[in-house]
Image: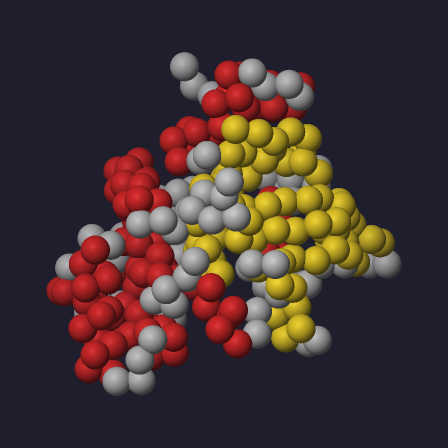
Length: 253
């Protein structure tokens, strides 16, 4: 039986706005097994991106806790302390916002490698070039600024930066939503290769086609709660919850 690498229990996130409390995530339990791909699907505003940020340590939950390999990710005021920090990395929906527009993409990846792998900048550049090549980014393109690349290329650079930490878990929040169909196919091929390498992935998406293609298990989220979860084949062929049934029915034939 696979071991849980990342799990959460009793997670709730409530935001305050103009004196009102707005619940985004409501008392959910979640787990990701080692080497597994788990999809979290739901419409916009369902709470899935907030959940992703909590699992990545970027948002402190109002209640509940997250465990990485059985250890709490929160130690006092520090999230993912020490070596645990590089174990879980996140790829964001908008790749442009996560890249410094004044830094060539090669330097952006080198910076991450120097932070997580080696202080030798020459060695870091060699590692970065190999990593970017694997992501489908040529050496010529690697020396460009982010605004000179396509959306799909920028997203693959973002994946390269995340992989620079040599993580055990990759959280991808709507990775295909801001890129065209051709770039989506290239990114899905890349994720398939990463899965073969044994990387554990949490895939956040409203695109059920992407979820079905990559995921072993699926959580269906509506209004901050999981209304259904299970093996991908069960969710897509035998959905039990009316909301899940509605989502499945919306898939183009």
